[in-house]
Structures are given as structure tokens and as C-alpha cells.
Image (cartoon, rainbow, N blue to C red; front, side):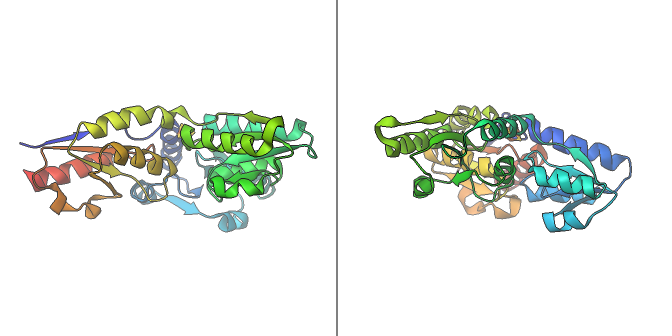
Length: 288
Ligand code: SF4
């Protein structure tokens, strides 16, 4: 009988668990609750909470609201969001992850205390990602976002660089950014390196590699917008080319299941356990 195993170390990180718990507590009171952006980068979980009454809104819709409650998800928000909330009498249920909050404070401090003429805040992350917008907002929009070596030209390397990272990037990628920028600075390199990567993601890499290598095939369950999902999926794929990324059971290529003796199911920090269980049940029903 083939084995179907769920990785016990995959699934929600504490930041996401807290945000969902806060949302559910509010919804249980029977009040209307808005969430600014998807509460988690997983459509299935967003849909489950929508059924309970959570209304997802974008920033434009947020500006129109008054006298209500809005939940801020784990990714955090720029100061502008809090200002609008105050003006419009919106009660904020703040589920910003403490790790992100610390990073926002660090960036704000470096920006406020730094010499704007001679220093620059650089953030390694995905442009337009909610967490990155929240970080850039700490610098009045002045921080420079780099996604890769193609963006190094945006950085003024004659200045002192304070390099930070979006929490879900890879340590390897951040090191590459630091090395490249230092090289461009030349002999007077003047770069302050801040490894602000969340260990909830980084520490999962060795585990997920070990898990992926043990199985003939991996079904990596995650939403398309999940940044850490992309990182963890790539790690699985490096050690096990028989890795498929799926958002839900309908995406499973069932033809690839035949003949497999050992199928592993794992996911990102935004993947609900119930979804991995659903995938496991479906796979069992096909192969048994
Ligand atoms: S991945 Fe880390 S920083 Fe992001 S929400 Fe989870 S615990 Fe917080």
C-alpha cells in the first residue's frame, strides 16, 4: 500500500495563526469585520473565512469606510493606513506579525536617525508586496526596493547602505545582494547588513529538503501569491524533481500518482493544515 504522508512541520506560522485567531474571535461576536487585503495568501483559507463573514477589501475601499472595524493582516501596513483609520473613526484590529513590526521599527529608526544625504535604506524584497509597502512606508517612500541584481543600478553606491530584507526572502538571496552591492561600492564599501529574514521560513528549508528527499513525489500545497511558498517549493524541487505545486486538489496531475510508493504533502507558512489533509484524502482515494 503506498504511503501518503503530511509534513508535520509545514503549515501556518505563528504570525498567520494569530491573525486568523483574531479574525475568528471578532467574527464570533457577530460583528461585521473587514480585512485589508487577503488575510493569508491562500484562496481556500480566504474563502473559508469569507463564509464566516470576513469581508476582504482593498486600499481604495478602505479609504471609503467610516466607523467600523478593520483587521490588518500579519504583513503589516504603512503609517498612512493608521492615519486614515484615525480620520475615519475606524477601529484597527492589528494582527501585524511581531517579526514584521520589529523590522518596521528598525527601518524607521535607521531612516529617522540617518543622514539622508549620505545614507540610503535598501530593502531586498518584492516590489508592491504588502509587507514591502509597509516597510517602504516607514521611510516616507524613500527606501529603494531591490528584487535582484537587475536592480543594483537603482542604488546609489557612493552612499552608506542599510540593507534589510523582506521577512520571507532566502538568506542565500540576501547574501548575494550584500556581496554585489559591496562590490559596486568598491574598496570603501560601506554597507550595514541586517539579516531580517524570519526564521519561521528559513528554518523550514533544511526540514523541507529532508522531507522532500524521502518521498518519490511531493505535492507542495500553496497559494499562487505566497512568497515563502515559492522559496520552499524551489527547495523541494532542487532535491526532488518530482515536485508539483498545487493550490487545491483540482490541480493534481493524477496521471503522475501511478506507481508511486511514497507521496509527501507539504506547504508554505500560509497553507492551512485542513487543506493538506484534504489533498492527502484525495490522493489516498485515487491510489488505494
Ligand atoms: S513568516 Fe514570519 S514574519 Fe511572516 S507572518 Fe509568519 S512568523 Fe511573521
